[in-house]
Image (cartoon, rainbow, N blue to C red; front, side, top):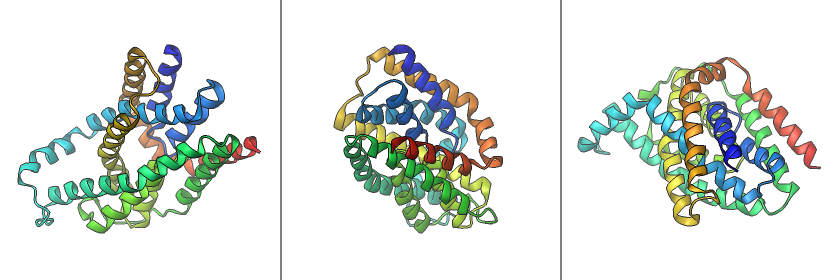
Length: 263
């Protein structure tokens, strides 16, 4: 399992930054090629996000350091300050991600027990993600400084849906931000900033509820280390690719292949 978990970490490190659902594709890979139980594959896919979480934290270290320094003076009543608006956004979006994401994740665990139906649902989720991305515009003028409480609540709900494998977290949050008239650069940055606390809370919650996946300590460390190293090396390049390439087409193709192969 040692080599397999390192390979999975490498895959996670690459595709986390692309709007094609790293979780959904990891689950499909683990079940189809490694013979891992569907429910266990779902837990492992969440756990491997630890490495890319640290990658995102380092990539956006200046922003998070600014927010950390602003925390002692934070007040919900002074949203005129951009640091307070961004802190409020991260708090509210993470809270609502948890409220929506937990039952969605539980639903995914239940669906994992229904054989090919689970694969069909992942395929349908990939198709849904592709359609949403295709419909998103790119002519907005709002920036990260324009984030509102309403944006925070809605984005938290949207991000929570990505707890189901196949629904790309970055794909649907970036698309929603474009729908809300944010410009492309701000949409990318906001999406990945909000992923850090959300994934951190998901990791803590999963460990409390279920404990670590059925991995040895060495496998767990090496898997996360692989996803971290590949993630930090590839994030800038793959984010540039994601801006220029129509990833919605790949989502549709992957989704159709998954659905057809499950019939």
